[in-house]
Image (cartoon, rainbow, N blue to C red; front, side):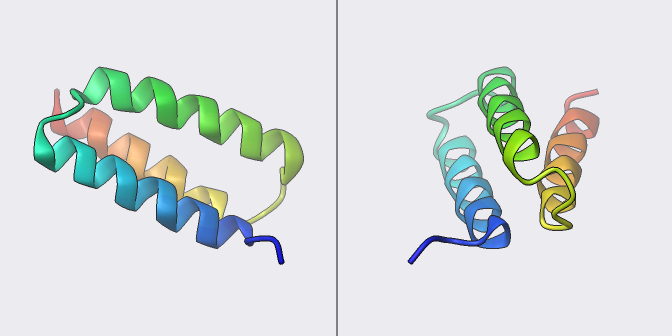
Length: 66
């Protein structure tokens, strides 16, 4: 069984948040990884509404460091 985009996005965000909270990653490194994941998912599932949550998470992270 394959995971839906929403499930993938949930796991990606949870992992990124944990790593940020633990201090394992700084935002620029996390953002770069999240952006690559987003591009990959957009290439395969361009119209999936689940991608918006990942876009919002990235935008919130960007806003937080300004």
